[in-house]
Image (cartoon, rainbow, N blue to C red):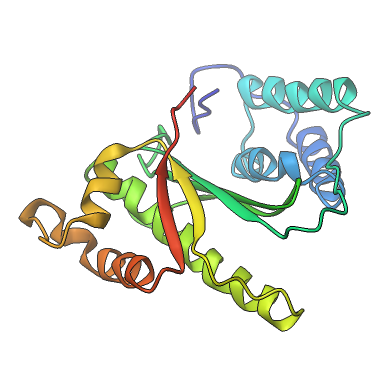
Length: 207
């Protein structure tokens, strides 16, 4: 669902809309799975339209249908940290900024996740994916340090899965191509973590 500031639908009661989004925002403390969508709905609080109101009601219907859902954590002996990185290139119809997303799980349950609009417009899907992967790599560094502090230091690299093969090829290639110079800082950071065996890359089919 792509929401825009003005999509031609009629305007709705702003007070009621703000009350609903405020309630949903409060609910994100125990339902982090709706955090990103609530942040999107919050962008239209000044002047909400019917499409935004319908989207907010969609979140309510989702919550009603998933009351018995949750994250299960098992007491396994192996502390395996795995992650997924993805992006939505130029997904915002108003400013064409991309969205960065990642999720990391220890044993069976997600312990860290993020879905955030990138601060600047990406000129290519590879650039947007690389920014997303760089953010995921930063999170890996933090999680490794956290595990080390609690006595669970990991010697082997932590696996990050993504569905962009061009990103994997660029990250593993020693030659820095001219068309990717706009992401040079992220490139060197990720390359450094790959060479130090803190992370490893694996292709994950979009499906």
